[in-house]
Length: 162
Ligand SMILES: CC(C)(COP(=O)(O)OP(=O)(O)OC[C@H]1O[C@@H](n2cnc3c(N)ncnc32)[C@H](O)[C@@H]1OP(=O)(O)O)[C@@H](O)C(=O)NCCC(=O)NCCS
Image 1 (cartoon, rainbow, N blue to C red):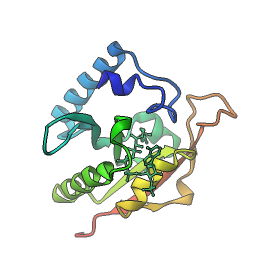
Image 2: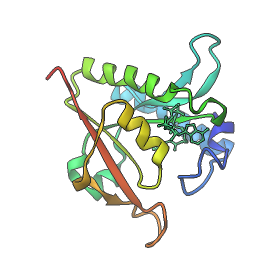
Image 3: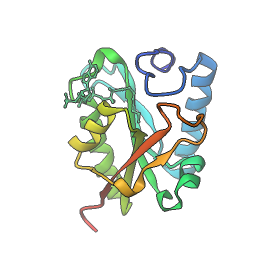
């Protein structure tokens, strides 16, 4: 996972790559969140070989995103895969399973958030039936004004069974 988090191309829509230590902090946080919230971003593996290819999962939206727009107080879906596995529809495949899980535990809605410039991630959102919410546009206040990654977008999907 540290190789993926440390890859500048994988992280090109993020402010920086992560070190091994920072990756371990994320993994420990994910384990803790899964324990307290019941779910979090988790390792994604190839079905056939079990090879670790990245992460896909659900997470309660982080506090800074919720602070940017209180109506976002909900659960997000997200993904990050090693670049040799891009373009095979694996992120949508895993994300659909996670959406089914979200509906099975009765979540009313799932959001997805990303940098406005991150077209590949928005393609995954579209492929799994999420809808862009123009009213949800917000800024990543951790970044300087004018930073190209500051504008962020929100996609939504409601629980089809509720
Ligand atoms: C976003 C991401 C998970 C997509 O995963 P995936 O399994 O490749 O998804 P898909 O195969 O459905 O491809 C989705 C889009 O990615 C783009 N894409 C596919 N292969 C690509 C490649 N080799 N290089 C660059 N972009 C590529 C295309 O725009 C594609 O859309 P299309 O199918 O309409 O052409 C993956 O690109 C990734 O891990 N990116 C880096 C991390 C990241 O930005 N995560 C999202 C943070 S919000």
